[in-house]
Image (cartoon, rainbow over all chains, first blue to last red; front, top):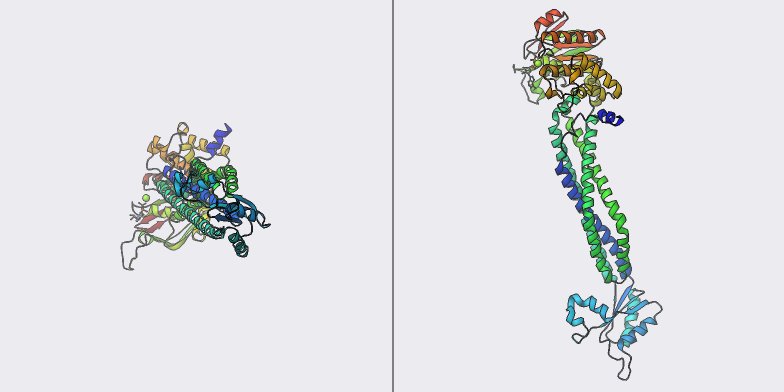
Length: 311
Length: 230
Ligand SMILES: Nc1ncnc2c1ncn2[C@@H]1O[C@H](COP(=O)(O)OP(=O)(O)O)[C@@H](O)[C@H]1O
Ligand SMILES: [Mg+2]
């Protein structure tokens, strides 16, 4: 009973509820919200991965030893790879010195060499690859290079420095693209709201004229309009955000596949996946609120501007 | 009090059309000056096209005068901001010639509109609106929408909406047009009793027999000019 009273108290003089929803508005806002969700997720994923990759790459040294199985001297039974490993392990500044197993090496090179080449039998002589963490300052690296060259001539020392610089550029471009996408998506949503509000005003012109004549203030007319549009835009934002969830989960699984490449990135992806649920739940809610806010602001300004036609 | 100071309304100028001073054809109102004391009653007469509706539009703030100035209920609408003019409109009840009811609302909700804009208590609204609609013989039509009502019934709903807020100024544009004689007499009694309670009442009509029966000062328009006031 009390409820009935309440609903009588707001009889919706402009006829906002009586009209059918603007399905186009909800659909377009949902589509924009879906794109925004992807752009934001891509942004978060790139930053997270890049942060961990950069953190790892900055201290990673890769040492390649050509012809790893050959002995150091004709008489000796120590291989070039073992000699280099021993030398590296004696360096106090280095840690985590580890030779990649033939299987790991094969996995890394598979995209380039295919199965046959990496199955161990004959083919190209693969270099031995050693990973280590430590000082990647050019001086330190030059000293190390000189030392290793005496033990196993032809050994190469690579650092992550160049990679890190390129990775930074890449992430920055990706983040700029994501920001551009968000801006475009917000602009499209805002213009669709504007069109929808204008259509709504034209459709209810007479009702608005009448209640204006009865003494409704501009805000008495604009506020219910803005509330209704905010509700519809919010609904679109929520739907788009929810629709993006399965896609994001799937992308998250794909991203997990990168875990193997630089050793230290595995932790990063793991952390990202662990963060996913919060992101996933917050995403649609944030999109709903942002879409509702855009709808509310655009509706208010459009209606208030339009009402200037009336005396 | 209502005062017009050389007020005019030029529809061409309102539409933004330029006119040279020599142009004869002028539609609207020309140079009106008069005073109506508060609590007064006036008949507004004149042939069709004389400018009765236009004069009422100036009074219910649907149009601003294009020349001169007006004073309504002791304020100058041109000096008020938009919200101020809206609040002034709430003190003016209008019965439009074409009723202007909201088609998606019931008779009850149409009449309740001014009270809801004024944020009256819902129990008070229910009592006032029901009583008024019963008084004009629409007790069994409360939930009907305008399109389910006859022309005369719609007009009575429109009249109820105009008077329900006890306005300081009541303007009616040919309000008896769709009513039979008996209903027209009842309606005039309603207007008279509102007038006795202090509401200024102005009724545009060319129903001479009605004007004869209810003697009151007359404002007569001819081609947009005030030709008689008394
Ligand atoms: N919206 C308008 N635009 C242009 N001319 C108008 C408009 N409304 C009325 N007029 C003209 O103004 C004059 C007065 O009209 P109106 O006030 O409606 O007269 P009445 O109500 O006495 O019949 C008429 O010549 C009419 O054609
Ligand atoms: Mg008229």
